[in-house]
Image (tube, rainbow, N blue to C red):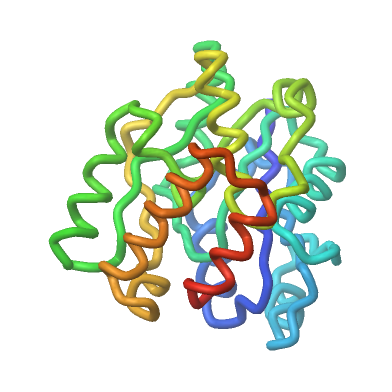
Length: 230
């Protein structure tokens, strides 16, 4: 049983070297089929950094995280897909934790998450991710799923430019196919720092509410573009 790590990026020169080195220092080679970075058209030199890592495959793609991750899944040779954001750093031995869950017939899930920030709200928000509630989930926590189950669900919905992680997670919760590994992944608080913590949190809640009220994929994306600085 092996894991294919899939990292969608767009202009991640500031963090991708650190992440790839972190992964190399955190997994056992025998469990990893490949590490793939799916680039949506970076213009900041990200590709040059990635090409310095012999064990990493760089795959060009159309822009759009759902499209990029689906493309990565089609190239994957592993039995398990592990989708990871470029600014999220999984715990040491993350591959062993994932393999152990799949062997226990838990075919999809994520890690608990903490932000690289001491702000009380972000510390609380991170702490809450240890619970299994659907309300505590998000793409920054990373996502593992067996390739068989991913293909059965037909992958990420490419009509969503944002919120694609949440759509897949909701499908998995409906099937009761989700586990939260009680180990901590660290993710960047940079979007909160750029947008302002309370402002960004308000807009994230607004997007969730709009989705619950029936907003289309394009309406969610237009709201995101108008209010949130990426």
